[in-house]
Picture 1 (cartoon, rainbow, N blue to C red):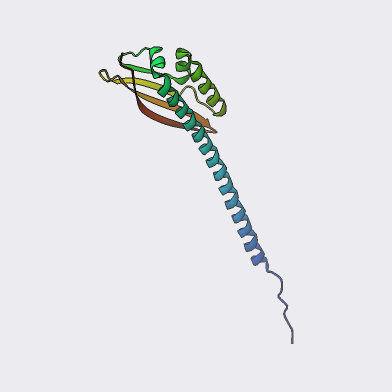
Picture 2 (cartoon, helix red, strand yellow):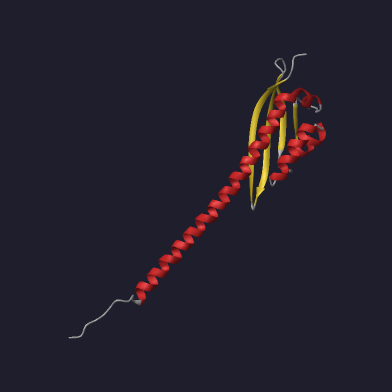
Length: 153
């Protein structure tokens, strides 16, 4: 009687095992790349939120001073953030701007501020802030709007 000893793997079993290993490795690598991209996007968004919050915090303290340094044409002012920084020449705003734009891959052409008078009697102003950044081949942006009040003279 001939005894067959088939304790090894056949060629087909070996090929299937190698294919599964390659598929799992590719899926893991794809998940890692997606996770790293997501982390970079989240980090940029966090920095942008901090940037806009710092600007609005300054506006809460010095809105009248900042408002006195700009001209509202037809009750509206729109400019890039960089030009706004140069126009108002406020040291606190300059520090905020310089600090956050160094940490962020900032897109100065698409980052804008709009200040619009919405009520003459109550001296209410709507402030819209758009901060844009570059994230590799993709662009991101964050928009924040709020209402600020002027003082009664």
